[in-house]
Length: 454
Image (cartoon, rainbow, N blue to C red; front, side):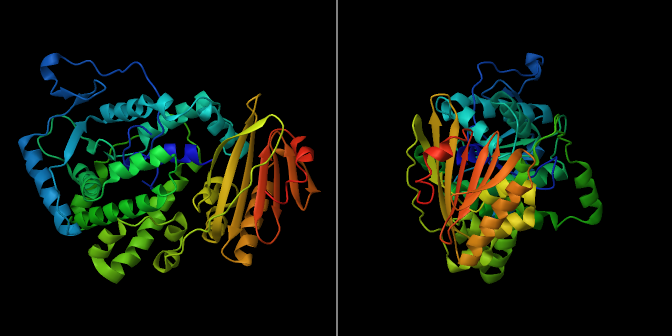
């Protein structure tokens, strides 16, 4: 449940999204990423004499001209002044053409795909999305959608692992235009964050544990600070320059229609994150924001700032194994507040799904698979209060009731069973909301004595 969400978003810290107002892997960058494999790289063929340099994929890089270098140094000084922090080393960067930048995003996304997924794991991740009603895409189709998301979603990026800032710039110019400078301010802020905090080590640790539950909260703080510094740079522009800057924005148009739920995590990073950071700034200024970078807030704390300032964390929820013939446990993890809107928002709306997320006390999940590669998913959640638990329960019921993919609904073992190609059971005993999703309806009769106590 959690794996694909994070691989969609991990690695990269993006500045903005060209196809959305809101701003998901490859080698970690500042916003999106899964990973995959490719044995072939392609690049635009140009006369050898005109090539400044090539990146690791053979894509042409653009030289930073002397006047650009002066601007870059000025932007570095601006970021240091506004954050009150100092770079420990000169930022690493790579400049691309617009097409080259999109090509880099695609190839880097694909580069480690097979390495990042164990055998059958990607197929199970996509099947999970299908069973939740998020998508009907095949594994290959989903990979293609994510490739396109990588290509069209960002105006610049900072890679958490190789610590390189990457932005597309116009060719044959001696200076950065205003749009490019604004993007650079954002990504330079991420570069500085990566030097002050060992973000590469943090990412590697999450990857080693296969637990990215700390990612969303810190990412939200990082993006909000970068947005704030970027906004302060733009505040120095007059109206004429602002108009010129907006006209210089590259038009990275997605070639296919992308699922809207891809962008839901970005709402946490670029909408709710700034609201929290505004309050942090009001209480302690940029110094307090710098301190917040060291914290690992939950997504619930980002959605609801009061929970951040009170230090409220998730309750540890224990979910017992289900004993089912021919099914083996393959994956398990925790449920965070971001998971609720990710699954529910497109069906019941942002307000209802975020409200339910804010009341999450804690949760856990387990995935099982049989010899036919059928998937069974169990979930268990608690609320901060009994009222919050009821709100979570009602949100999932509303999600299920709104879907036409279920052919019938019936009461079953203290809960409600929705029957279809995917069968979903939802219950609330006043202490926990429990859910079971399976493709095999007969499972429910087999585990009927286990359903009220897992």
